[in-house]
Amino acid sequence: MPKAGFKSITVSEQVYDKFFDVFEKNKPELVMKGINSFSGYVTYMLEEMMQKDKTFARYAPKIEKVAVDDDRVVLKDNIKNRIAEVAIQKGELFCQLCEEKDCVHVGFVFSLPDVYEVLNSRGIKHPK
Image (cartoon, rainbow, N blue to C red):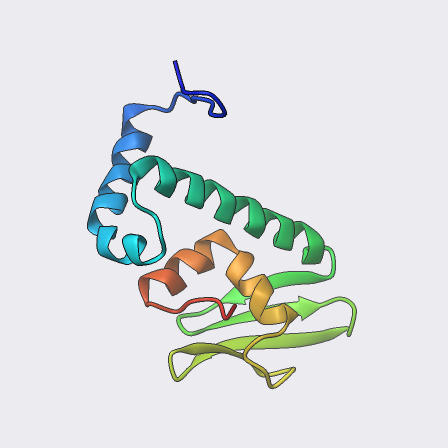
């Protein structure tokens, strides 16, 4: 039984093991972010995914993913009726259309789960 103010969930051992392995491997970086427990890590990941879903839902009708290459993502901006190319430059994402490192196109790219995983593995983080 969880303590007051908390709820428990059930996940498969496979899912638990994957999350726990990532938590253990990244413990020093997570502690620097104030994440000191496995439960805190899972909570952090759930909150991150909810934020990404909110961003995706907000911009998805306005922006569409066209293609993903090794170092760039091509988007169709339905508001501007233009193609936006977001590329990796100097270890950061850069939007060729807006000529910025932090615009809706860059944010949209970070909201794409498959692209986010690749960026994260390369150490490329969303500017906050």
